[in-house]
Amino acid sequence: MSFQGMKAGAPLRKHLRHWEQVCLYLDCQPFRSVRFPFPDDPPMSSRLLRRMQAFKLVRHCHTDCTYRLAVRWRSIFQRLWDGADEEEAAGDAGPNVLGDPFIADANVDTMYVSLLAPER
Image (cartoon, rainbow, N blue to C red):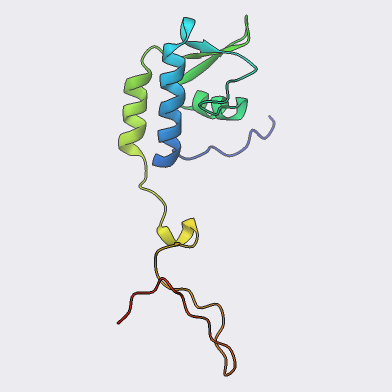
């Protein structure tokens, strides 16, 4: 028995928003399928489609090497959406451009002040 990797957790809402765009695109295609080379809009890759395959949103058809959208993708997607975690904390996402002021350095001879800080 070989190591298959660790099971990934449920996707976040930001990922599900992208997955919804991919599913809607596939839903409009003939046979509701896509094959390589993948389109640029919405951006998709085989890694993304394999991740969606893990949640049974798409399946890989070996006869013609296409990824096909599941017939009941809307109900599967709704269950994923209802069970998804909220967005990550704003502090983990990176610096906020218009948020709290950030002081890079403060010494006797140096002082940086954010110009976007509200006056008190």
